[in-house]
Length: 435
Image 1 (tube, rainbow, N blue to C red):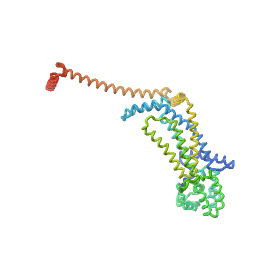
Image 2: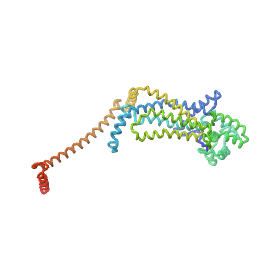
Image 3: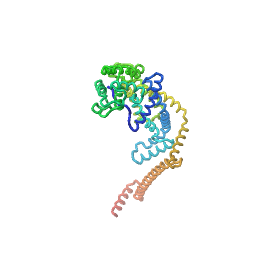
């Protein structure tokens, strides 16, 4: 069963990002089309390459943060070992202060590596939506679907589409088990006209496979010639290396086909890319570390999930997944080669300089970046030393009281003798009776 989404992505965050990514894809398709090549698979690969290049600076920053973390890890592990098993609030505060001091010592922050991932997430979500709705953003592709829309509705422009014009196409989609997710049922299309209605019809047409295009031509004989002509062009656009990108590789059949190569390659390339990326991550000395075990588990489960999704999603998504992992693999080789030549002392110096500039903007002298953390740490250490000194003083006082008591009871007799013990009892009774 195929699934539909609204023609374009809306929203305060994903909407603008999708528009930018869609514009890039439209430029690439228009460029290749000027040479007589209009192929969605090729366009997706070029699009993925451009996006990866645009995101390359963020990848470098993220990998630098990971390499820096590898240098910091022994100090951080020493702090964790120091406070292992201590769950009181005082110990937790001290551990946080010491941890913060280590990060500031190297001119970074606890969220330094995560920030790059947070920035990339909305870009990736928007990118998936663009791939899923290519006709919405790429006019050379959308034109062929609009030709069919006009033939089905007997119009020549989207602006004149009237209410209910999509009823027959929606019924066709229902009869062919195309779930209209994101598209209102027929009874709820009241007031939907013009371009909005044309976009909904394009959504349906974009999900048709070759067999369904033939069925569409038979269902609408008055538009059969237009449907067949544009369907032929659309099939060529959607065919990449003999695979129809509008259909999912599984397609309800367990018989292996050429399309199965896409999910298999998606899993293999993602696994290889992840393994290569993990080579730059800090090594964990503690084999029982939960986060390390979870990461190792995800390195296996994520590629398997990629295989599953690429079997069930349209092959166009799988092409993107394979291209993305392949470019990521090549990119990681370049990044690893670059980072191997990076002078860590110079990297730390630059990080500290950047941190000092940020502190200076807040009205603090640059040198206070480390001084503040050191001062806080010294304060906590001073409190700890004072508490330990008070405990030692109480222990010493108690010890002296015990010694004084023993001397009092044993002063006239040989220590340990029967007389000494008798004197102790007598003096105790005497002292008790005097109270």
